[in-house]
Length: 153
Image (cartoon, rainbow, N blue to C red; front, side):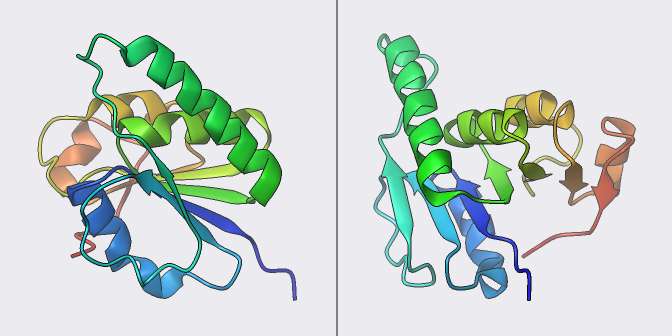
């Protein structure tokens, strides 16, 4: 059987909560990339890699973001995922972009909170994602090639 290894990638907070809803899809060998956070339980995922939280408005954003690209490259080369599945946001952009450049499939799910306007991550990943999913029909006006699946909650 040829099963695909998946990198589940989500920033902390609501993005991670949405990813947790997809945890029944996880299988042995898959892994989670997320930010260090106070999430009470990540026991739904056996293999977790954490990055520091960063904010694009902080003074050290650029060096931290560059560091995130290097960490993401290391993770892709070490873990060798076939698919990057992301619910956003900032912390997931580098691994999604590098994954695409390295021939991995990229699946992006726009946040449930985005009902009628796009997230920055969504705008960036819409151009490169192999599959782009929205949770509200209204978002098809913004992302016409997206797939509407309804809410994952």
